Every structure is written in C-alpha cells, then in structure tokens.
Image 1 (spheres, one colour):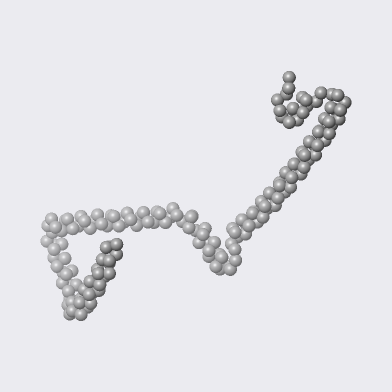
Image 2 (cartoon, one colour):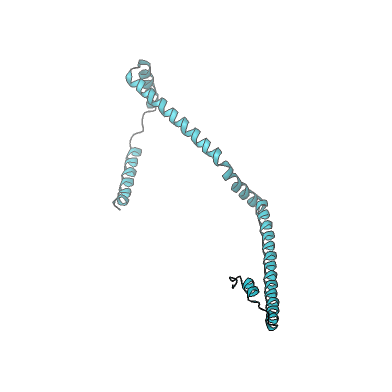
Length: 165
C-alpha cells in the first residue's frame, strides 16, 4: 500500500521537473553537433574506454538481433493458430454472417443429432422387444410348470442365476 501512495508523489515530482526544464533556456542549436564531434574525436584517439564501449555496443547489437530473430520465429510458429480466427473474423465482418467453417460445423452437428435420435429410437425398440420376449418366455414357463415340468434350470438361465444342482 505504501508503494501506491508513492506513485503520485513521484509523478508530481517528474511533472514539476519537466515544467522547470521547459521553462529554462533552450539548449544551443549546435549542442548535438558538438557532442557528435567530441564522440568522433574520442573514437579516433582510441584507448581502453573506447574498446570497452565498442564491445558493449557489439553485445547490445547481438542481443537486439537475437531478440528480433526470436520474435520473428515465434510469430511464424504461432501463425497457424492466429490465422484461422483472423480469417473467420474477417469473413464474418466482410460477409456479415457465419463463416464456411461455422456452417460446416452446424451441418455436422445437425447430422450427429439426427443420428443420435435414430439410435435412441432403435434402443427404445430393442428394450420393448426384450420386454415382450420376457413376457412370452414367462408365460411359456408358467404353462410348462402347470404341466408338472421342472423349469427351475430354465428360469435360472433366463435370470442369469446360478443353476440349481
């Protein structure tokens, strides 16, 4: 929380410093030329400071070049993931309606729903058929029992119970 209170004070100080700098006399017009001339003289004289500066600049250049290569590689690697949504968004905005991919998915979804409904109907028919077969077998077993025939083994098989010995 103290950090949040510090931010307005820092911004106010920076604003005051900027206003003071703006109110001061402008720098001389030849200041940049003098600075560049001094830098050129220093580079001509050479020395360890110049070589250290050139080494740092070379490392900075290589680091910047490496960063650009990494960014470009990442952009090419992520291009397939970005291209499809951008193309769909562009087609939707331009055409004012759903894209071809959305239409294909909608048609596939409709076909799959119809297939699920068909399979549900077939399962229902099979369940009713099984129930009807159970009733028929039950009536036949009752008639066989009425004729004094032992049907315990058939009932056990029908119910998937262990067969009595």
